Length: 525
Image (cartoon, rainbow, N blue to C red; front, side, top):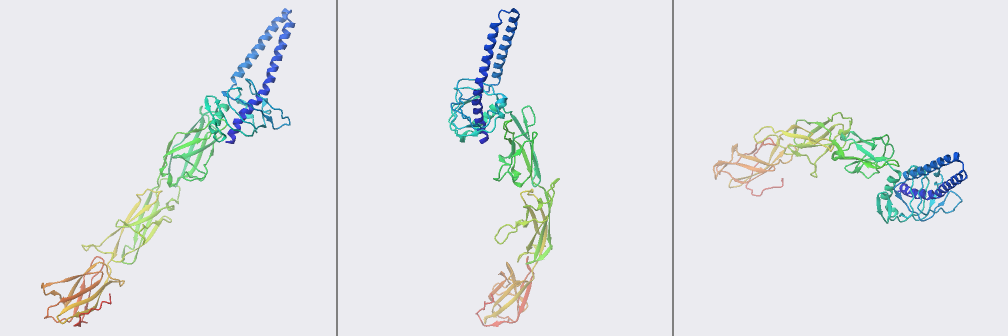
C-alpha cells in the first residue's frame, strides 16, 4: 500500500513542480517573439533582408506549432486539481509553490532533481479546476517522496474511470491500481501454466510462462501457483496457513518443484497469478488440469506355521513392493502405510473392538495371531477346515485394491473327560457329575454329546426301551436321577464323548459309585 500511495502523491507533486517551470518557459517564448518583431521593423527597408526575415518568421512559427504538437502528444488522460501549497524539504528555502490557472506543461528530464525530496503535508482534492498534463516518460525518475497526512479523495476523473468518491486511505487500492496502469502506461501481460501430471510421493513441477501482449518474455514481479483456489505456501503445501510462496519471474518463466502429497489426489484446477511490476500489469492464467495419481503396489501374505493348535500363535506376514512405474521415492512404501488382516472375511480386531492396523516397516507388516479357544479344525462334514487369510494395504498414497490371500488350518484340541461323582438310589436311579476340558484344562466350548454306559452296555431308557444319549453344554456333565432297570445291578459307569469340529473325543469309566444318597455335591463346578 505504501508504494502505491507514494505513486499517487508522486503524480500530484510532479504536477505542482511543473507549474513553477511553466512560467519561465512561457516568458522565454514571449521575449523571443518580441525580439523577432523588433528586428523585422528595423530591417523593413532592405529588400534583400525582407525575404530572410519572412523565412525566419516562418521557421519560428513552425517551431511554436511543433512545441504545441509535442505538448499535445505528451498529455496523459489524468486530470488533477491541487488547491494547497508544497514546500521544499531539502532546502532552507521554504517559499511556497502555488499552482493556479489552466496551464499545460511537459515534464523535461532536467526536472527530476527539482522534484526530489519534496514533503507534502496537506489535503489533496481531485476535481476539474486546474488541469495539468504530465508526460509519463519521466515519472520513474522521481524518488524519495515523504508522505504526510492525506484524507479524502473526491470526484476524481482518472482517464475513463469516473465517480470515485469519499475514499479514505484504507480503501485506495483500486484507485491507485488505475493510476498505476494509466499514468505509467504498464504493458498488459499473459500468463499460461502447463498442465501437471504426477504420482503421490514423487516430485512434481509447476511451470508458468509470463509474456507481454507481443509474446516477449517478462522479467520482474512475482508469481504464485494455486490449486483448487488455494495458494502454494512456503512449506511446499497448499493446505496450510503458512506464508504464500512468491516466485520471481525471470525471462518469462517460473518453475516450482514440490513433493506430491496424498491430499493433492483431489487436485483438479491449477492456475498461476502474476502480481505485475512497475512495467507490467498483473494477470491470471486460465485453469488447467492437475492430475495426481495414486501409487501401485504388489502384496503377498504368508501364515506360519500353516497348521497350529488352539491358544498358539500363527504369524501372518505381508510383504509389499512398490510397483509405481518409474518411481524414484524408495521410502514411500513405508510412509503412512499399514496392513489389516482378515480371517474368513472378518477383520482382526483388538480388545476394544477396533480394527488392528499393522505399520509397514521395510516393506513388511507382521501380526502374531493367536488361535482362539474352541476354533474348529474340521467342517461339519468331517473335512479339514481351511481358514482364509487376506492382507489388505491401507494407504492414501496407494490404490486400495492391493491385497493378497493365503490359508491356515487348526489342530483339534485333545480333551479330558473326568467323572467327579456317581450316585445311585435305592430305586436304582443314577446320577453322574463330570467335566470335559481341553488340553489347557479349560472347559470346552459349545455343546457336546454324551453316551452313558452301565456295566459296559449303552444305557437304555426303561420308559421308551430305547438307547439314549445326552446333550451337555460348555463341558459340564450333569445327569440327574436317570432310571435304570431294577434288574440291573450298577457296578461300572462309563461316559463317552465323541469328536467334534474343535475337539477330539474322550471317555472315562468309574466303579466308585455312592449308594442311597440324593444330595449332590456340586462344589466342583
